[in-house]
Amino acid sequence: MTKPIISTPLPNDEAYEADEVPEALAPECRHWLAEAGEHGQRIDRVLVASLPAFSRAWLQNLIGQGALQLNGSLCTKPAHKVRVGDRIEIELRPTAQASAFVPEPMALQPVYEDAHLLVLNKPVGLVVHPAAGHWSGTLLNGLLAHHAGAATLPRAGIVHRLDKDTSGLMVVAKTQPCFDALVRQIALRQVHRVYLALVHGAWRHGPQHTIEQPIGRDPRQRLRMAVLGPEHSGAKPALTHVRPLALGSQCSLLGCKLHTGRTHQIRVHLAWAGHALVADTLYGGPPALGLQRQALHAHQLALRHPVSGEWMCWCSEAPPDLMQALAAAQLQYNDESLWSLDSEPATP
Image (cartoon, rainbow, N blue to C red):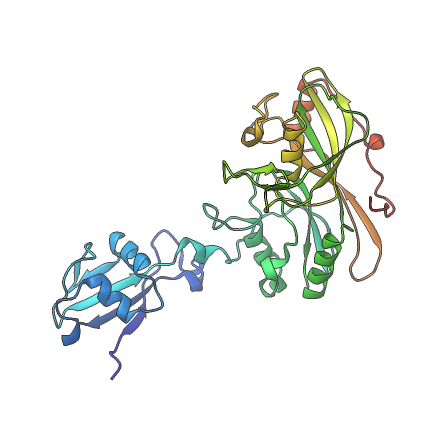
């Protein structure tokens, strides 16, 4: 006979109004009476046997958080021995990951939107997709609140990402056919992206510079990417086209056009070329000119609309912090030196 385990919802956390707690995240309580076969066993082993959907490590974590009571009293020792007839009560608190796919209203900055896709201007500091340390407050959470269809799409329609501290243009799908079409365009290098990059040093290369170096995980520091030699199996081809826009003796402003889209590609390629981004400490660029985040902005985005077939191009001006840094460096630029994306360019 299956042991009766009763599941009841717990009251909402007092820090929230009742309608502010997502139903999926409301804590749940399981309770039952210990049977003869559980007498003398460790409480964490009893929990694992009774709640097989949860790992022993996670249940031990709950015990340490004070989520377990025996006979109405707090129990914080996983090794505590159970006695027959003990009333076991545990609060199944949601994990941090459980909040990752919860809608969170936020002020998105749309540049263009129709029934099929959304082009937005991502601000500095906004994480695009949930990950360790950022399980909520991400663009994905905002998209889930922005339109109902996001919940039915992979990654809520996100087809490419920007780093947390990189600002600028992103495209997001709103339907599955659009998602599939955008993924294909990106894979075929048919989505064109141009970035503004403020780097340390006087530009030492020519007016048309190509960096074609494979990128992979840095074997010496796993949080970084790096240019890797052919002996590293994890390296992937990466190609960045660079044009200088404004030159100074201490800093230079560059236009960078992605041909591939590897993780941290522009940051890695420019550091490898001897011009680390201003305030990109991960890749050797110290803060300067008042900037405390890497000086990278997704300035232009162009693609063929997946439904209408129309060639579309958008531009996002540099945000205030980057403009202030340019003024401090006495650098001025205009878009005339950049690639024209008003009509579909030939893929290099």
